[in-house]
Image (spheres, one colour):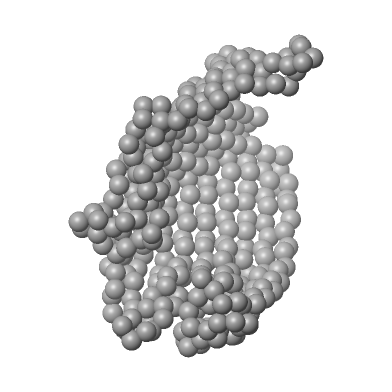
Length: 322
């Protein structure tokens, strides 16, 4: 098969900054977006036509308030839209001509609304940030079969509801000396589906309302100890990834895991032959942990109570690099 896709975007932006006081700065604006996707068949099953995504008012605003020279409070609000994909294997054109005709006038593009509020600080040897966010994701697109598959009906994209995401991010760096520093970060993320998935006939095909979004760990934690005197440098780090679901009904998951890494290197200088040369050695997965790295390699399924879905990939064993 061969198709000719034409994607025509039009976008208008307007924004400005206001220094309201010496401490308070406000940024605000909006954008208007219209994108038309057109497919033309050259070879293969016929699928011709145009679909468009548009939103004439996507506001964005943010502020920064200087509490002191060392402390800032910041916040932002933004709305966005994801335009459709021009592809034979993904997006609205990945179905048949009849399937495309059935969805072209009713399919809505995915949209989001994001709110963030946080605090930055730089107090001597310690600097960092703490932020909270709330994201509402609407009109999620999912490929569903249009009627019984046994009679050859194709799949087509449908809007299947929203996703609510709330979380907290925190990170800090402590400069113990000019050469030694400690870095730590933590993220808590709670993402869940707002609706059940329904088929073309309106029947519930997956009771996902309130379920945790697949491949979204609630907890991520990382710590690193670093040394760098200009020539000799080294680091030791550990990162934790929490439990992840790989079924929409949350009846199958992979456990959390922690990986450690070591790195040491030397930068040569003071010699014309060695200037600019650097030697570094790394060890990844230091303790040779057995874990599942990628999930959903063969897509996500509604349910897998026996744990036999072939959609998980093993993580790499301990490796050495020089």
